[in-house]
Image (tube, rainbow, N blue to C red; front, side, top):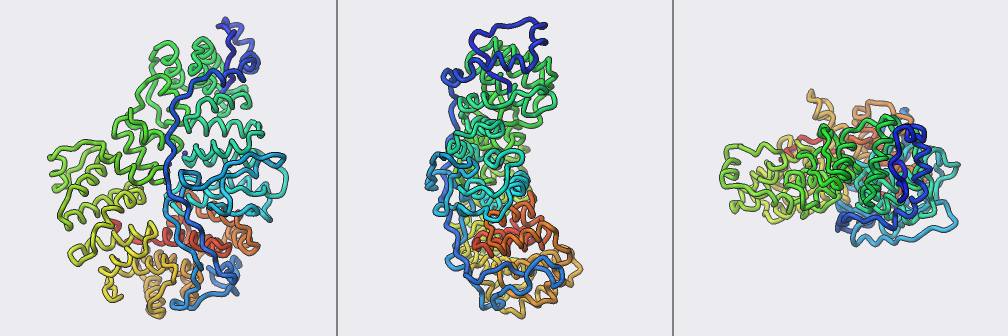
Length: 638
């Protein structure tokens, strides 16, 4: 949701002339003398509690005949038009044994079965925490891939998206134990890139564990990534120990690595009680042109109790939060909103922070699978409300703070005893979650309440919202019960029924079912519609159905696929033909992009779905397809 050297005991404050003469390189040599010993003397601040999460659901085993499906008209050249397909819609080619995974499958957390071991005599880039038994993608997942391309695309791969399917695939790709791809190392090592991406995704604890499996790798890029991960995870002694392997640089004013190294040095010096050395580091930073008033203010307060004037930051990163705590200064009121993903979990769990900060951070953390829904529920219950606040909901009067609006709604839902009124409050909370970009976390925190409600005609207005919510978390059974209220006896009327029926088909591992001719007629009618949103929904539905193995009439595919394939799509299809699992997952994520499957070009998402299915990731492909179509659906989210 995701650094110069530490000085030795005998270093004393120098005159300005001496410091100018030394420069960064000279001071670094002075500081190096006692850097190894510092790790033994440092105190450690409390580490963040490791989240308890569900086990990753084993992926399904696809049929032997599965192959990448055609998703564009003949002649476009991106797909194989001769791929086999199941009859539409009744003779589905099911994903044998493919059980949709739970939305928040977080490898590496409690109960995931990860086994950590050290590597000896092999490329450190092969290190990992997952194998094929616990969610890994296979030891040979990079077979046929070139190292330079894998390095390039890993650095581009989105790791923080609104798509639980994409986030889960990215996490598993980064954690899988696998032989590195062929070729010489280009820039940063694969291990360094993986550590950095995991930390950016908020999984600093997993990055720390991954780094421990490859302790022998002391390269600067790995050391830098190890320090950032350890700092985010609260392992400050490990972060400070990594300083010995991080290059100091000579231009902290323009070099991000040099700036981080200098700031981390100051942090570690203060942490070790070395105030004189920390002040010397501040002087050096000023002389080298580092422009960061808040850094100077926080270190000065931590060393001498001086609170120098500095504007509140527009963003709180890993080191910023650590320095705030070291200075015993309160975080900005909007810390939960401006904190970077690597620290939102920590802020959500910090009991010293006010409810607003924790709730904002907790919502973001829950959206990314970094905390469980029951933990978010507890955060919503932190803020006390008066009866006047609850009465205000009837007049659509909400607290001015966005986080408190959802907290108030959550408490009101649990206090309401009348099912119809409770249903209206649920719809309202889902709607506010959708508009705030927090739909997934809102759905998950409301699941216990939703499952307690019995579908009935009196709750008919809640049905569209309930269908969407249950489909998003892979609960087809509950979704079907509520869908029966929208389309009794399968005869749906209206746009909601049309789009929800399509979502039910796409998400069902047993196939779309229903009347194939009627489905084709609906698709044709939508594609000819004068409403742009309706045409886009039908185009995405048609392409996704074909990508999942259901033949769709060629005239519909021709109308749905309006853009030529890109080079990346061609690479993706070629990777699926040679069964290159890692490459397929990586290229799928890169091609879809950080906007997620609902915002991508329909053909791009469909190609990713087809390719994932071709490499026996059928359950993941279906989850991605469901998210993609749901994002294009205008059936009421709440």
